Image (cartoon, rainbow, N blue to C red; front, side):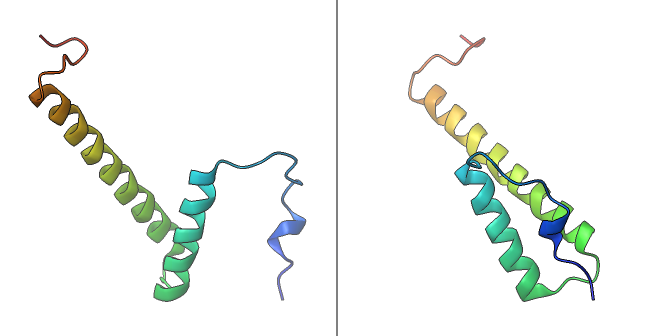
Amino acid sequence: MTAPESQFLPAITHQLPEEYTQLLGELNREVSTTNPEDVLQFCANFFNKKLEEQRVRFMSDLLGRKGAGERVEGKP
């Protein structure tokens, strides 16, 4: 039997960012439902996918503003 992980973590004395807790909750649900054999690789893939989605949204927003006539920093 392993000890609860909270034994090894320092007490949290401040509020964690909402985005952080949402991401960890989503990751926890994904791990629970898929039960991956390689948990570390699964987590790396999860966060890489999230990062890629964020970058796509950012570029889409950026190009949408430029297409609407808004000046994008560094571009005419």
